Image (cartoon, one colour):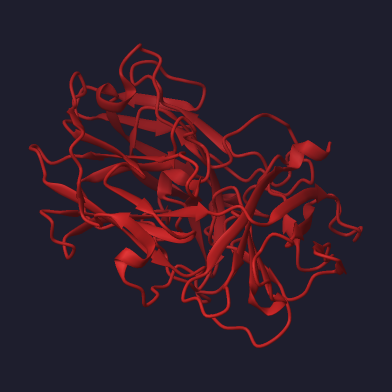
Amino acid sequence: MKYQRGIIFVFLFFVGQIQAQHNPDQIFDSAIHTVQIHPIGQPLALPIISLNNGNALEISFDDFNANYQDYFYTVELVDSNWMPIQMNDFDYIRGFNQNKITKYVVSNIALQRYFHYQFTFPNSNVMPKLSGNYILKVYKEGDKSKQVFTRRFFVVEQLATVNASVVEPFDGDISKTHQRIKASVDTKNIPNFQNNLLTLKVVQNFRYNDAKTTAIPSFMRNTYLEFNNEVELVFPAGKEARWLDIQSLQLRSDRVAEINNKVGITQMMVKPDGSRSNLLYNPFRDLNGGFLIMNTESLQSEFQNDYAKVLFTYVPKDNIPYLDQKLYLSGALTNNVLDQNAEMQFDVKKGAYQKTLLLKQGYYSYYYILRDRNDPNDLDDYTETEGNHFETENNYTILVYYHAPGARNNQLVGFATVNSFQNW
């Protein structure tokens, strides 16, 4: 993307709205489940690594096929909007860009049979040469046309220093329901820096869909660019995520209504949910829409945890469905994407929305989000389903891109993550 003038900064906050851009997080094979990509030892962290500093991502997934599959992976450098760019593989990677996944474990104890595959990136076979946005592609039999899933990740070369904070909006009408982002970027270490080639993107709680953008900084001082816009960088605060504990498939946790494990794969029914918009704010630590694969039974979570069919129910006011809006189950459990896999279906007889997901034993967090069914560019809305409170704990991640003169790619030259609790 080319900009003619001015400083363009894009703040991507993982908050939960859909953008008209390519979605690089997809599963194409129904046998693939529980795909995870994160820095080693940090299962709830953004999939971001630094260029040439030795840290790595861990990638894992479960395959319900009954036998071993010959899986390979490749990585692709893309632009800041996740769209392809015209570059040869070896312009941005060292090593081989077709690598076989050799590490796997066959499940045991679990009723649902699966192969658990795992690998790290970068490694001795392949590593990135350039910073930026990347897409990991996993496919069968060395044939790139047989993709089974894709996942986004980030490689950063820390040239820009980023500082940010979460503050209360000045506008009294939204000061108790929204959060405002203040950010500054020091550009002194960016070679050949030109204002019109810088892009800044920020994201909230892993929800890549809702990008906030601002064209110019509020203030410029030497090499510092400061952003403190009262309109463009204000976000609905939401509420702490709902939770579901299915670490055990034998004992009912506080959110589980029923368990049926007498008919093959375990079936679980979550206690019905409803609107929380009128409830008083209740602070508690949550996973901000993420999940952790674990159990209470001293099992090896990766290959001994079982799966369950989990039924979610949402009861709207007076059992009446929302007009002209779709209801979605949002969070990492539905891949942070508002698609058919996340859409709740209204049952007229029950007067409630329902959705069944196949989930691995663990601890999950989630939200309910409404979206206009007639406008694909509509912003997601959880005002009615969850409510908004300024005190809500949220993570905001700022990503700074720079398109150097003559370059074909957008460098990721800085990032920072700020938690709203840091200011209170």
